[in-house]
Amino acid sequence: MVLLAGACELVGALLLACGAATPLAAAIVTGTMIVAAAPGAASGFWAHQGGYEVPFVYGALALVIAVTGPGPWSVDHALGADTASGPAWAVGAAAVAVATAAPVLLLRRRHLR
Image 1 (cartoon, helix red, strand yellow):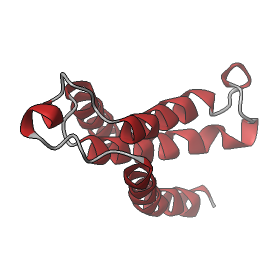
Image 2: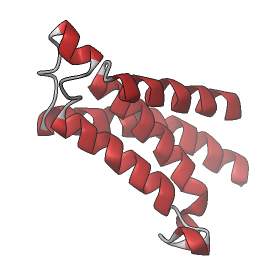
Image 3: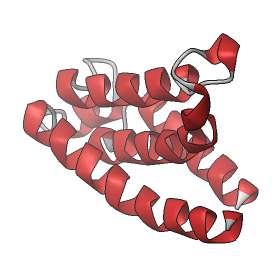
Image 4: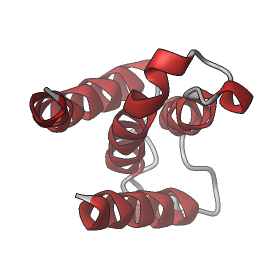
């Protein structure tokens, strides 16, 4: 699972950095960050207390990029696909992120019992 999470973070980050498939990249990063935030949820929000602040910020920033779009120097802009941004795309990315993170969180919960 660690290798899968690392691969997802890497792919999502590279896609976001290049501005390629921005809504999908936002969903990948946000889903991975939901799973990364789960172990710290019992400790509260703040990172210095062992909380989930850092994964929350990274996931939220990915969704912000899904709202604002990749920008004029992106792969999406070069391909003419930069219109795939806005609140509806961010909500869709968030829904995909939650749907893909849920099975992992349920599996984790089952193993913690």
